[in-house]
Image 1 (cartoon, rainbow, N blue to C red):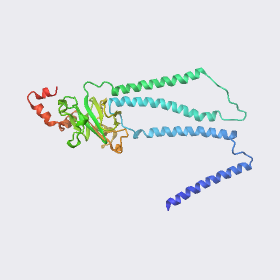
Image 2 (image 1 turned 60 degrees about the vertical axis):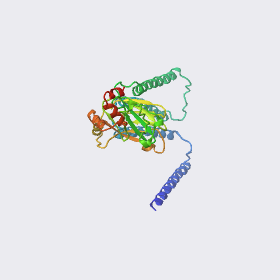
Image 3 (image 1 turned 180 degrees about the vertical axis):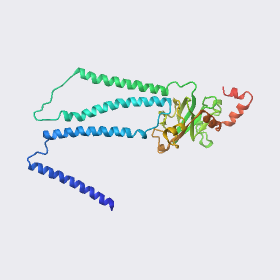
Image 4 (image 1 turned 45 degrees about the vertical axis):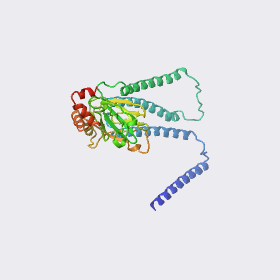
Length: 341
């Protein structure tokens, strides 16, 4: 009943507005005024309204920017993330300068150059200098933006630190699996023909490769040590997925049949970020940012940035996927030394 009354009230409001407009039109015609033709008074009032509108629009936009500051992502938690934020900030500064200037002129011109009685437009067909300026200046700005962005891309995908810890991120519908390269920091070979979910070999790890005997597989959480370069080798089983670390400002496509790589150094532990955000439940997260199927919305993995001691303690609690092979060769006389070569 309340909804019906609300709809009825809205309909009555529309009828009321229409009737008021009709009354205004009839009264203007009785006074001899042509309501369908704007005169100098209409042009002046419309020009003033445009100025007030654009000023109110800018005020609301500025307020929105300040209000949204506390609702954005927390500070970047990696070395790459700091550079990424700087690139975005640089782009936003240029965008806002151009946006405010062009938007203000868009609304100022109807006010400044409104049609008046006996007004005549100035014929200005061509100006080489002006065309050169508005061609060269945006080109220079665009070149600077591209070069700055390429420097960030090179930092993300370029040659990693030789001491980087190697971690594989394996994506499939609809979850992630992390594989640590173990004590030799070399990932063992994999083969899609060896994938066997029944035996829990979801990555298709090759048991004949000694480099894989110390590899550790984790599917519930991704733990990484703070202030340590991490090299992520990314693979996908079925369709294209996205490897996206929002808090570290790093991402790359995860493509079936090939290995893509990104690397960064985490700079803020999970506990430190919880203090910064004043949120005791805060957690870093790994997301898929490519629409990969019906369960895409639920494809994520918790990321924990530990202190060096905490990470060592966590690693000590993990076991190599081929623990029996690792123990057998590691504990045999000279076996560990030769097996891992």
